[in-house]
Length: 178
Image (cartoon, rainbow, N blue to C red; front, side, top):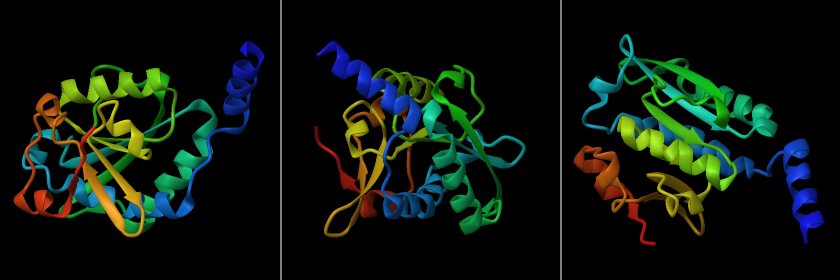
């Protein structure tokens, strides 16, 4: 059993996680727009710039870069009337006082994901997750493609984030229940 776990960890480290490209494209298109629905966005800007942080496992740098390119392709460094800056960082490089407006969490180990979520909650910034299951760990929003595309919102955990959204947001999301 120990050998199996070691084998899996080595493969994750060397090969990275698997991703659905269609899902990534949908998230790259929709997640930035949802940032604009935060009623307190002006308090989360840095020099009138939205800073969108993509957090990745050390083996997924190329996937994070691909996602960054997809977002820039969609938004050309502007989101609404704001400038858009994307920063990509490994889980281990995220500090408690990171300057960010929102965080996109790619796949990672449970401990890494929980650590990022706790930091985001303290900063009151939106967390988007690639994995729907990260909502159970405390992420705020995850887009999932089933028979249709659904945006899931973890309203219960939002008590810790304390984020207020424009009314339209509550009309387009599905509420996640653990």
